[in-house]
Image (cartoon, rainbow, N blue to C red; front, top):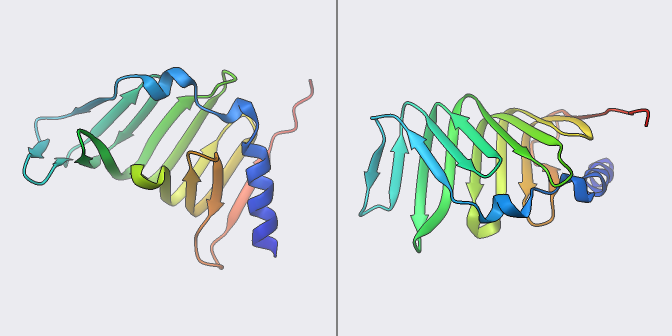
Amino acid sequence: MQNLKIKTFIALCLMAPASWASDSDRTAKIIIKGGPDCKTKMKENTTECVAGLTIEQGSLLIKSTYGLINYKDKGLNSVLMRGNQVYMEQMMEGGDKMVIKADEIDYQKAVDKVFLSGNVSITSSIGVTTGEKLEFNLKTQEIISTGESKQPFRMEIDQKDD
């Protein structure tokens, strides 16, 4: 029951229009940068960068020390990024910046979700959310704690005086 309350609370907080990424970001070109170590295997529809990967799309910026990209139907199918804390930032619709840090970020286009694991922290205008495993549904803007029952989940809400 406690887990349901947490999920409901998070969903309500994240449904605010200020928490949505801008429309221009969703339609912007995706720019992928890596070092000379990046290898694209055309027959396998993959690109692997073992010494670092950066992805940019509008205000979205993601940096990692390792990246594996899978392609499907002339577009991205999935992106797995690992490292000594993968860093992700994006400007939200209301002008606020959201920053995500995790040991691993796994984007799966088919389900429109980002799976975050390992020392996860999400900082937004609402506050800071932390946990070991979190799932971010890009369609519904919900963040769900998906770790084991003993794994801690924490949310700090900054009460601003307006």
